[in-house]
Length: 89
Length: 221
Length: 218
Image (cartoon, rainbow over all chains, first blue to last red; front, side, top):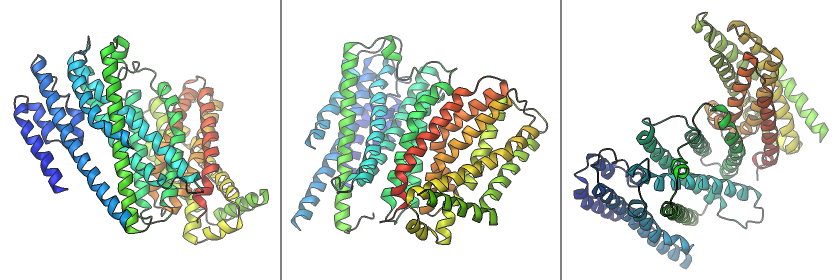
């Protein structure tokens, strides 16, 4: 479990250069992974005009989803392994 | 169910579509993109409640043991439903702040999501008070069914209690103004993505409960 | 079956009459709260919405204090097992429901004149006020009786009953407040009363179906 968390954190850290320009988005990085999706659209008032900001938000949300998806995938595989072990018993 | 694995495709697709494919709405601008996250979250939280209620009914009437996992299903669905309801409330209040300048207005929709959260918190309080008792599944299922019976009355009550409020614009602004084909498609993809996510995590939680049961060899957690 | 119902009702009333536990606590709470509100209002006549809201808040919390007693008493005194064996579940539920309805009617009957008196409520249509109060009391009693059965099996600590009752009692509470307000200002309260009766009916029906699952132990 720790490995999964660490890899998710690494993914988020790599995404931070995208975020440093918009202060509100940094709050997204520090937020719990699940809730980050809800707040990802918050930067709209603070972000400058133009669809550069929109792309940036999109990439952050995608990276967050990557973290969540990776966690889910790992959990799925671990559970499958446990189930196989139990069925063998 | 293998179909839930499609979430790995649908969710990134929904995110990309929400930001690039769908155009910004006429009046609201870029903030309208919250629609593609807030609406599916609210929809899934209602669906989770319905699944929870159905699971509770199945659990109580199941005499032949045809649905062995119904107890875990309704409890896990309640947990997931709480999470999605909290997220829906958070995204909704952020959007309300952007649109009307205040986080909370006691709009009909906001009120009903608060009631749903109240029901869930009462359910979890009951559940923890019943820890260790064999009747826990039955009693918490009974409570869910009672709460579910009271819900339709809510939907009826709320328009009468808040007659002076403007008609609910939370769900409707873009739909009333106009929902172009691209926006509709993005919304559908997003709803599908979040629903798949819900069913996927529910399935994972159910499998976890099953493993825990067989490891501990009893029905109590 | 009818014998079991009547027998249980008589038994519950006899016990209650002997010790007057539930009624006393609930009535004292309601009276104290009413007096406290009147005292702190300091003679200022509150608005109509505030008056109707406070009335129902007082009734709700008195109900929370008094209505769980009928089931928790059985669990505490160890008579629950005997009751399970001797009477069918539906009879037990009917008896407890009737008892709770009577208790909250007593509370409402005592508190309404006290409230109108102390808070200077200017009733435009007293009959509508009485109807709204009765219907609201019935709604509270019918929705909380089955919840009291659940709470009794969960240990019966007082605040748990309030926590799980509140979301279920909230719709009739809202409507009752609206109906009371209508009766104070002189508008028609019939819609609210009909809603409260419908709510009571639906909750009683669901409670009947669920009670067997709650009451009977495997």
